[in-house]
Length: 268
Ligand SMILES: Cc1cc2nc3c(=O)[nH]c(=O)nc-3n(C[C@H](O)[C@H](O)[C@H](O)COP(=O)(O)OP(=O)(O)OC[C@H]3O[C@@H](n4cnc5c(N)ncnc54)[C@H](O)[C@@H]3O)c2cc1C
Image 1 (cartoon, rainbow, N blue to C red):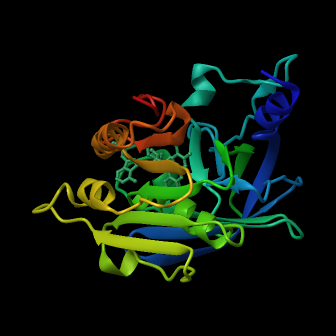
Image 2: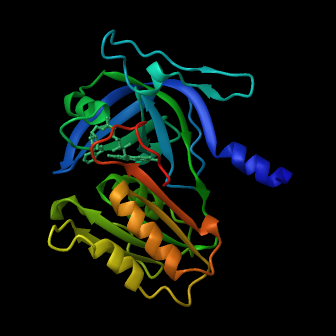
């Protein structure tokens, strides 16, 4: 790995162990609760990060305490099993570097440490922020963003921060029509919304695979969705775009039906 790559790798993750305090809670659509947080420490969200995300640390349910992980000699987080079950990944929906405030959109589902916490959250409540990270930087590649409801915040953020003249396509499947939001609309961005439909379970994969992406710059596919959707998406695009390098396919299992975070692999 050359020096520049090493530096880039290092910059894709920042560890802060900060305390986040709830400033506002709002139900913004049938599927989402938006929480605005202030952070007691500055956090560096690189403006060139694609789909940045946060490692949130929830209070131990038995004690109510937030115990931050320690860092080892290489500045890596030491997460034991007791702590790991309290950590969840959530995207940055919006970030204000002047006030150090974040917005996070939590999908509403019946069980789950994070979702249930968000449904009960009130002004003044606190959680931890272990750090922030991203897998990718904006490059000249044409971004193809694919996601289900859990990736709506990441995709919205990324399209809203897309550098001028960069091109992006988005294919987003939501639970309800009213989960759709208005997004930048210009000649560089094309957004395709779908509402989940049990009669047409393959609509997202079909749309991605049938899209005419020819004549664009090098393509870079990014995805975040439930595992059983991510698998056919990964398979279909790798099968069609065989000339692209493996790095051009960044499809992550954001969640897995019936499994809590930490009980499944994000890439398989
Ligand atoms: C990098 C990254 C960024 C992410 N950003 C966001 C984000 O901004 N907003 C967001 O809502 N999610 C996001 N997710 C997904 C989120 O981390 C998972 O959905 C996580 O499992 C939620 O934690 P939980 O404690 O609520 O549920 P868990 O305790 O992990 O799971 C409990 C149960 O809930 C189910 N479940 C989990 N997620 C969902 C869901 N979305 N819909 C229905 N059932 C579900 C599980 O299958 C399990 O049965 C992101 C994931 C990653 C990897």
